Image (cartoon, rainbow, N blue to C red; front, side):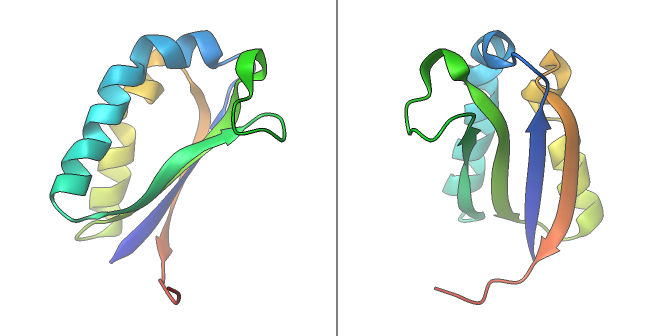
Length: 99
């Protein structure tokens, strides 16, 4: 089943994101190579694809996992969590309707 992982950043998270970015992105590469990644990306803190110093306000990942427990465990192991980037993380089942 698909799961949405919705993360909200702490204030001024950009320096924390930069430190943990390589490990964070490597996990998406594995999901992508396994055919389990539908979408992933950050939410810019301002209305721009390149928010610069404004940074990001959170992230969204939609990926396939065997169960909610597995999705929660994967989200819990994110290097961004360890680095203190996220203030909160919500994992919910996601039903793909389109495309």
